Image 1 (tube, rainbow, N blue to C red):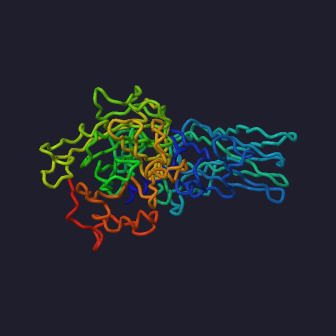
Image 2 (cartoon, one colour):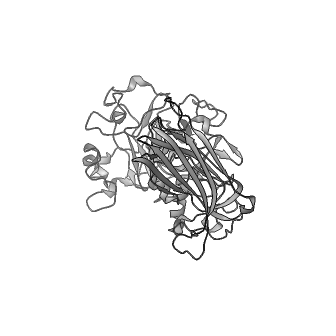
Image 3 (tube, rainbow, N blue to C red):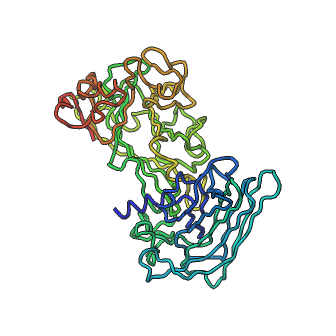
Length: 494
């Protein structure tokens, strides 16, 4: 449990750059609570995205004036100092007369079991930023130096901000402290012990999922309980037989991060299990919000020599706004048909099950010292996962999960035809006119699927009630509970 917790916390420390031996705080985490989790103390501060306050990025810290004077106290986590300087940017609004920043170093005291802070301190000095004139104030860089004799010692940087004015606020951003992050969030933010760190990435071997690889540190699964199941019905925009076995595959996704909490690679494990269709369907994944330019390369896809798809040099499909992987362009690349008149692959109970084999696709964001993108862990979640079926070698016919938007290659003329109720509104995409029923399903856990020509509403008795209520009733419709399943119409190749 300690390892999982620490991995989560390091994911929040997007501003911390252990690899370059500096600790940064750019005020871009979503709440003050996130900073508390990563061992920052921020008394008297709030976060603001007001354009008058923001110095850089989406938001900055602010200290408000209060009865002619406001105060904010900022303490860093424990840092093993390097290089001899602390830098930050300060910007008062027009109502502020001046802001004074005092800087101190708090040494570590092993006798203080509560927080390790010594009662003694090293005073680094102060700097005053005054507002001049009525125009908007520009950010001012403030710098404090300390003796090189302190390099290698443990300290907290303690900054006190005194804001003078009738109203308004002073913004603070882009704090950089030269040194190594040395707090342990899982131990009450006390300093870490001396690390056994074979790869030298700043993560202890017993916390490092990759102790011999300095570029990788943590596994972060989007499917933490094991594999999940995707199931597709391929006759969209018509309803079809609704057996949801035209493609069945299990998947898991691991976002591998480095010591600084940035994603190095996205590892996608796929297990194609069944294909009940007579079509030559393909399968792709769009990672919504991730630019193709942020991807270094993609390896592991299974593509025919005469593919209908075109690919960039990095392995992504050409022409999409978001990073789009074509995992395989034809199901025959990954599953073997039994022949003899069988209806599909692993969906006809009159024929033996064909073996299934896991495939792994890796999307590299960084490759060693080479980095195309800098993507934080919280920038790639399940909301970014957009899998889709490509129907019968027709690139414009793609089927997504309900409420997911298509890629740039979709044939838009199909929307709103036959039984499809897509009307341009995001939540309406790929929902049927009959109670909003979908053409694709994503289920947490590996579950059985329907044999050919048997509707999913037969095998899973609670499915229709779940779908017709928009997921409010029977969200556990797929589980093996009494009265939920009819096993005689279910198959389970795996």
